[in-house]
Image 1 (spheres, helix red, strand yellow):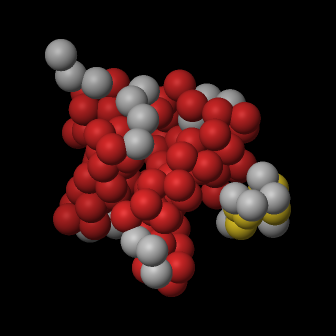
Image 2 (tube, helix red, strand yellow):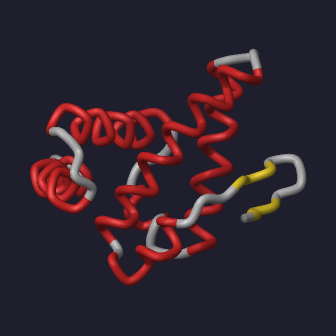
Image 3 (cartoon, one colour):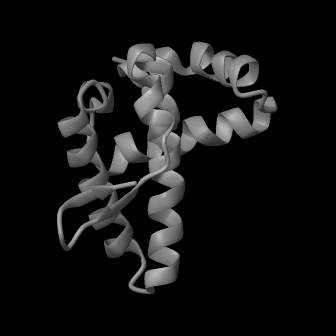
Length: 117
């Protein structure tokens, strides 16, 4: 059975093309990064993205996953940044009322459990 994300694939890519003015290939890259999160980090990310607390929990999981993949901090930061950016786009698509939150840049400090500007 397909996940919600997999069922959203075509509409998400179209939304990215129209609303973010991205080429289809770039939109697909975002989708596949989100799929990587769902396949390797946690399933049902749409539920976590529905609340700020859930998003913070997802970010923590992304940070830990990135560290487990790359011991090099710079590479780990790049991976977590690209995955986090992708799930933020999906959050913006999935929950338009939270779009202002997902559009804001932020920094997450795993050691301090802190979400900042």
